[in-house]
Image 1 (cartoon, one colour):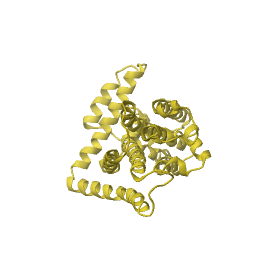
Image 2 (cartoon, one colour):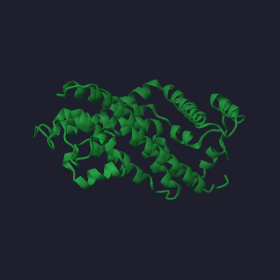
Image 3 (tube, one colour):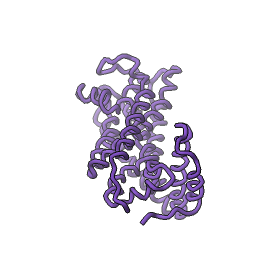
Image 4 (cartoon, helix red, strand yellow):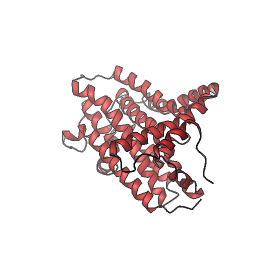
Length: 295
């Protein structure tokens, strides 16, 4: 049975039924974002109804995610450098990768529940609602406690920027916010693109997790400690290197282990745009291949 839409979410969705289906891309994008916001807003209001519980879970999340950085700090009690990189430089890699993953997980991480919805037939309910199914999936069970990861990462980033021995030119200054934004977009696209595999293979959630969470862990460490084949794989395959490795080489004044052209260090926006395009095409292909249960 389809789940009823009520309250503040239902009204704008019903109004949107009267709008033409052949809208410009910008209008469709705005409606998708608005639909996500309306769905996420319901979960946020539900969370904030129990403020003490929210504060405790957020605090626990901050402590838990901080342990990852503690591991790096403990490593440097026994060495001054790792792969030629110092602790502040590794902190920069850790913070940028963790922040990008955290924001992407906050905004679209719930999309990995697609397989469960396909199995139990409830995806059909989303498809008949007058709102984009992808927006609904991404906002489903939106949890503010996921803020713990990016908040902790920002604290580490501030410390690393204050500690790094870097000559801050205008391009290096601009690259920091650019890589943070592009990193969030790249991880978000990987979340969506990985989830679409579940249209054909319902048990693919762990594959997606290995790329997102595993990829973020990979980016915590300098590329100089990995084989060149692996580094090339995250440049020309799954473009995780554009999240922080390549722009960080320029920011920190480090040589490129692959000897790539300098343009690659500024190419994160292009990589992010390509990731979004591929994820969008994969999502549309998955929807076309999907056969509903009729429920």
